[in-house]
Image (cartoon, rainbow, N blue to C red):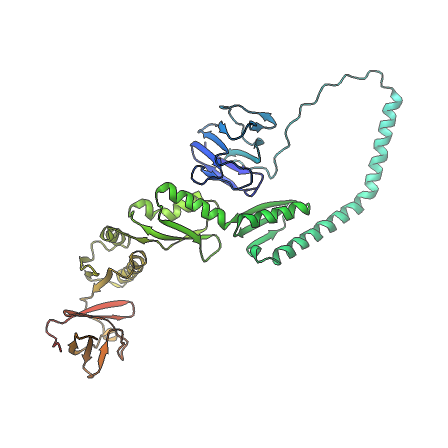
Length: 423
């Protein structure tokens, strides 16, 4: 059986998280806690549970006051009941298996009523008076009920309009939506804000206006905290996170030396373990063994048996014949490699395939100068230095003693100079 947890108080109110088996720490310290809560009065390690296939047990807690279950104090090692009110200081939560649904609100703690002595001298007249009072009260409620219902509906509608004005008046809530629920169920607020404090301010507004609501609101701050916590645990200490271009996305920056499958799977791993995370913008760069990473990229783009390459320090030259689909895959590989390793080494495809008529280079070299400002002289007797573009759209990328590197669109070509005259 697999379990999940839901919080009913604080910044993480209404948030549900799946639980993995084993020791589970809940607290405010990202380096010690498995589930990080940043509410006030939450200890660095606030609560420690043991998650087992058939039960969840209480192990340790912070503070002198013991956690309670449905109002009853608990001891260390106690087995907890699913779908039951659990409290530990400011923390209010419940758990259940993943096949069940949590209630919107937890029931108040059960209070055992004290036994009162039966009154045997109660007279029939007193009983009759009680019944009469109840009948009169019921009649009064029926008379005022319709008017009260109308006033209540008007009050709720005005409160909802005020809420929408409050959200529209603050750019921090531009990604928050309000959804009316059927059957007079609580308002549903969904979306994202940047900071935990902004979500807390919204909760305080809702509570102050006595609105019945359900908050499914994430903060980019808690997404970054969750991502940073997982990256630290996996050993990626040189990777930093920031907000992505899209709401709910996180950008990763920094350097990575690990080229294992674990890093290749980092995006689905983070999306699985960080609630509310929609995607990852991976802007990290690899350092170290770039050839090992290149082999992985070739395999990923279905090119390992199609191309052979030679490492020339500042560039890596590829040879092989590619069809249109393979050429597209190679261009994607170039983009990924450049993003991870920068401009050096550059990936250069030595295209030995005869160009079609529309793609002919028309690059007839008459002479090459390797002086202080290298340039090449073409058939039209014009000089083209590095960075210049010919009439037919060819850009001079580099002029070396043995070759000229040119680009056309996304393709790069190397023209050997074994027989070309040098000035």
